[in-house]
Image (tube, rainbow, N blue to C red):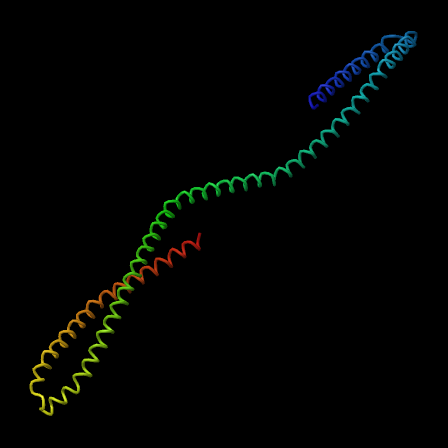
Length: 231
């Protein structure tokens, strides 16, 4: 459109130059030709004016077209401005989509990394279950041992109750030969007391081990529960 306008302007300029040249020629002819030839020249000028009239009309039409083209160009510029305004938020949406895509890729990579960690946690949970079962068995054994010790203590108490009147009898020195019987009974009671003391010493470290295992299991269970809640 701009090139056409330029060409049309050039044509109009050329036509104006031609008109100027023609006017100069007419002026020279007026000077040269006398009054007789003025009428003929006027006729020629009239004919030229008649020829120039449609040319002017054409120029007017071309100017109107140029005006319309300028209006169209203005409308197109307005549309381009609106399109640029629309493209702005669309570009922002595209950037947001790219960011979301990157975040999704990061999440996939994190899930792949968490896969072996979950397997390890599963193995650790299985081990903790086995350890808990072992602790349960050990606690049952300790309970049985405590029951046995309680029974033995009851027996010792009963034996002491039996020995009490025997001592009284010995104090009265009525039954001399019973001292010989009471002596080995005391030895037996002393041996049983030593055995009970040894069993209590053996149970002490076992109780400590059970307490440590219980603390470890509790800490691991709390850690696994916390990891599960974080997921």
